[in-house]
Length: 144
Image 1 (tube, rainbow, N blue to C red):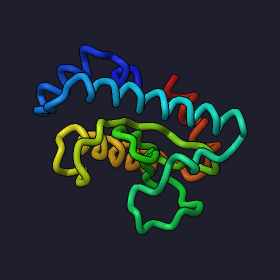
Image 2: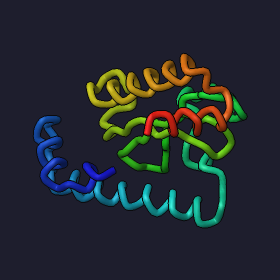
Image 3: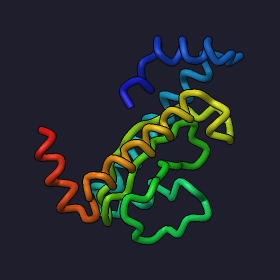
């Protein structure tokens, strides 16, 4: 999320992506970042499930307890996406994020790369036999 508040990064991103009103774009992305940060803090403070923010990546996917399911952070009219893998109840491995410039992920190189990273991490966790949150925390300890 740090890049999403870096004005120079956002200005360059806007130029490369032919955004017509660069100042408006930068201000909206900074506001979007603050909105996501506030929402996640509120969820954690009130001890709610992070599933309130991380929705199934595929809209038709069941919202239940699918281990290692792909998730996207989605907040009303927000131009940013965070991508995560649901490891267990209220345990998500955040893999990447992207500035959402179109409705179709594959149309944009950066969102497509974020989703590819998401799938790569999901495959890695499956290969490592991560099936419950305990095995996930064991893996994190091994990687330290």
